[in-house]
Length: 198
Image (cartoon, rainbow, N blue to C red; front, side, top):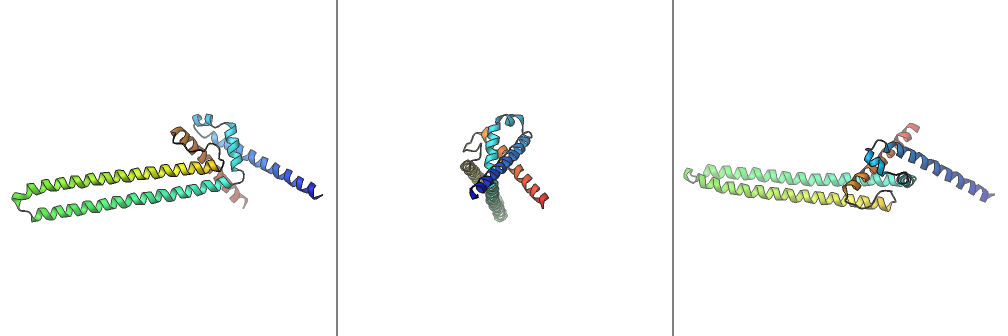
């Protein structure tokens, strides 16, 4: 008797999973219609079905949410680093202007042109250094963000999410961004449906 009961539960569970898969697939197909036609063509029924399967147990939604939070923290940290550097540069420029003004006020008039020429060279050297530091910071930011993208791609690939693998191809990156947007929209719908049920 217990075996029969277990078999019925398994069958019912399988039917629930199949129904949930169909609902997710149907929702994905509806959302895909909102994408540009060039991306609609690249998202086959099989890809969408595989994506719906990966989303069945909700783990991928949690992974995407976690990756999004990590990305926001990383972006905030990098933004703050860049702001600190800009503030340091602003303070450096102010100090240099102050130093130059004081030197000019203490300078004898006949030495002023020589002093101003030296100050101009010093200002140009500082501005060059500032540009180089900003360029280096921007490169660091881009590399860090590229590393984050590769980490996200790898994580989603390991989680079995269709369409995700490590790539730098702009078209594939855009497709992956669209897939992430579909997942986020489904997640939001799920939250709204959960709130409506309360």
